Amino acid sequence: MDDSGSDYYLKNSNEHVINKTINTFVDELDINNEFLKKLVDCKILSMESHENIMCRPNRKAKVAQLMKLIKSRGPGALVSLAQILDQEEKTRHLAEIIRYVSIEEIKNDT
Image (tube, rainbow, N blue to C red):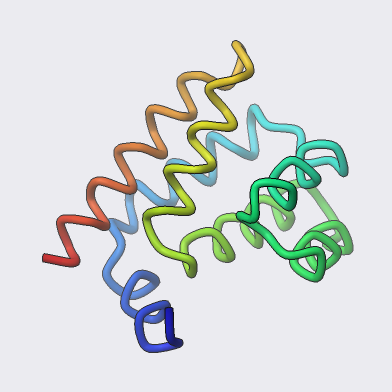
């Protein structure tokens, strides 16, 4: 995907839902090396993105950067993230929120 496509997803996302997702992540998801490694292994993030997230000063900043990177990759990355979250019982409802976000972004694309 070229840069213009990435901008499209960032500008036309349902901001309320995106912000709710970020806030839910901040409250409930531990952004650590192990979790980010799963995202790198699944090709959702690059190693450079992993390092970029880990150097953030606090959990909220890490989550915001993670969501920004994932949104820039389009709805497919959100769906992949939801699949990873489905594997862990405690984050299953986060997967549902992310699926909703990805559906909204796909609607915006048509």
